[in-house]
Amino acid sequence: MRRLALSLVLSATVLVPGAAASPAAALSPGPTVQLRDALRPVVTDGAPGAVALVADGRRVRSAAVGVADLGTGTRMRTGDHIRIGSITKTFVAVVALQLAAEHRLDLDAPVGRRLPGVLPYADHITVRQLLNHTSGVPDYVDKLLRYDATQPGTPWLRHWEPRELVGFVSADPPLFPGGSAWAYSNTDYILVGMIIEKVTHRSLADEVDRRVIDRLHLRDTSFPADDPTLPGPAARGYADAGPDAAPVDVTEYGPSALWAAGAMVSTVADTARFYRELLGGRLLPAPQLAQMLTFVDADGIGYGLGIARIPTPCGPAIGHDGSVPGFATNAFASPDGHRQVVIASNLSPGRQALTQEALVPTLFCDRG
View (cartoon, rainbow, N blue to C red):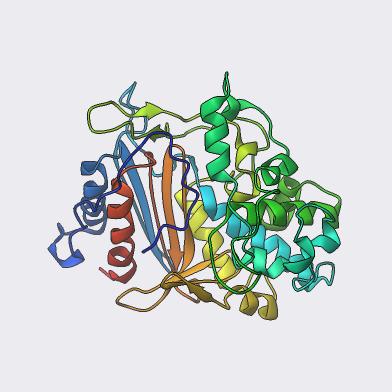
């Protein structure tokens, strides 16, 4: 599966396939032990710790392996808070679609109508194209990384305004005419967040809280503005510094650098519940949910409005992945939301990410 998520590479790292997870039938008996055994290759391939949750109706299994903190040796726990990265995009897309259902936002209107002058070609791309990454707007992250490498101090701890993030690419031409191709761009969701704030006259974090987090009672989920810390209990996040170096602790950094593209914090249980309720129809009216689940070809998988569809041996799985400094997460559910699989590890980038991806269909299809 192609990585969809934000890739903020803090050091040069080559991702190579890790040891694939064993088929469910070969794992040790007992659901908890079985899930824990399935997770072990993620740690073997470099992650300090990993956690997973598999839910099928009322049957919920969760397990954790490895450590949450290399300094103290604290074990990874199933309830640890993690940064969920680009899974944030699904939350933001839900808010945009709710506004569309309220007739407050036209998804097919030009971006320039809400954000005049934000990009030279803003009148030639639509909100829908931002949501499904067919806008052609370049990704700001590469330039943010180059800025980080050339500036003194700690730019990752400073506050970034959304227009500053868009400003990294505002002078660049589009990658292609809007609607003519697909390219993953974090800038798309910075623009969507700006549009939501323009329409509602409220902060994006407030709208996500009010419309999604509070509605679903996701008590362990938050959209931080500038707080660089994680609520407890939490796993420390690490960056792979190469084969001959210890992982670097990158737990704390300013979430405004990611904002609508990937700033949110959650747990595997809350993330699973979010996708269960979303796909079960609790957050969006049927017409808007159908629009969210209208997929375009995205390098061999499907991408809808802030949500992806991947193939598995037992049918499609729908959700998103998220990779930010310190954490890699995969969250997918059945099309009706009945079954959910969430896997997270506290290392990014690293080769464990591919092992983790390979484990998604194994756990998704395991009815053990």
